[in-house]
Figure 1 (cartoon, each protein chain N blue to C red):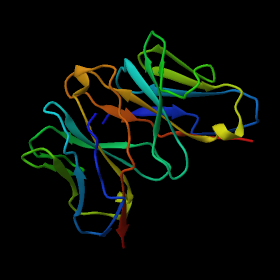
Figure 2: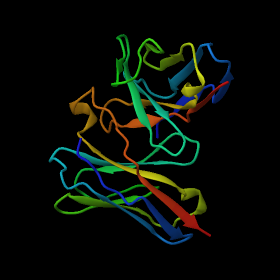
Figure 3: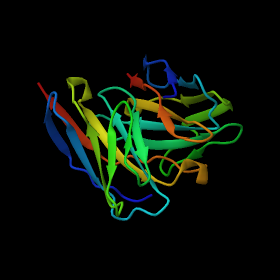
Figure 4: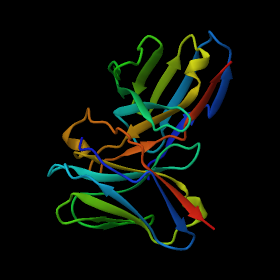
Length: 114
Length: 116
């Protein structure tokens, strides 16, 4: 899997948009970008994933640059409950390799400030 | 999204005893499940990949005789920590992969193990 680079920590004011960057300059053409988050003492929660087009769901938006070397996860209106560690992961589509697995890096610790 | 449950949510046991943790996919069938371990202030570390009906594949450095994995059905995988010691105290998290189009991987809520 391609390696990702994320800032160690970020702060964001409650109610503002939280923009979490991720660099994946060695991403391959068939690799997707996945985002998960882990709230303290809970299991990771799937947020969103995408290949090259921007994606949006009820939780967040994912903006992938045209060269696919970086992406940004956007939480449009951050709340205190969004305080968590956010993990950016790149990997081939799961259907292509049934033995593929998610390996976690250190992620970004996002603090939402009241 | 898909739901993955774990039981128990937390367990305290004496050193030398064995502990079994169950992982269930509640609304989908999972041919592949994963077991992770997480120590305080660290990221998740993959322990093993569990495929239904076959032996688990362990990551380097994980003792297969100590961490027994059974994936007997498409909705249940179990992790047994045998002869537990205080250094096995950790947060154990399972994950299950959905199938079909839009396949992705979902995680359980975790089991906190404390070995006294």
